[in-house]
Length: 60
Length: 241
Image (cartoon, rainbow over the protein chains, first blue to last red):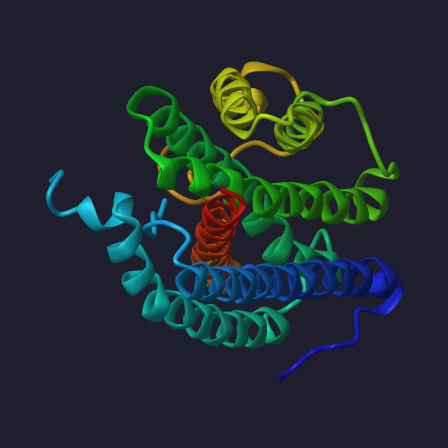
């Protein structure tokens, strides 16, 4: 039986879960946004470099 | 062994591997969290701690991951410093913010658990203090990288700092044995087997595996971001020539 009533300790239990969900959710969003932002920027710059013939591509 | 792990330091192979591994780890993390939370909230209250025992299912995995991620950060820093592997440096840089969040969560949820059980939000106990030092090492690592304009120099300085910080890892782990602490001693990995009841141990292990999978997914995504960032910098340099 699911027990979501933490009684007198509810504020401590739900603040812990809320904080964890917010922090981990924020980490997921920021990680995806970071990867997406740099992928777009790298692809745009590499395309421009190819168009202008700006030297050979070198990848890290 | 070296051949088997080659894909981890070859950026092209790493990008191919991480493209399918990151979503797989992410899905695994969600599935394990669903099972762990269900079992955690259907478990009975603890006879001593009441409902606050449910904080354990998120506090302990966060603390374990805070330590584990630091070991990964130290290992990647070692590979970057000694073998000059660019991907290892990207991995170290990507691990730091994730480890800092897990450690901050361990401190915050520990404080929320400590207040009703100990009557205090914080005590300068060896375990709590050493975890705070771990958190400060993460912050110092990120601050050092951000403070030095020359990326190569910043990476080397931060890698040395990360290796110095590894000294704190056994201190965190053994603090409850070496000193008389208010924080409870080892429970899951206690000598002679776990001292936790199975009804609490199973959801705890499921949540720990979920956190571990989440770290795997997030780490891969952030390393991919780092690889793209460096590719953008390389393309920018070519255009500026």
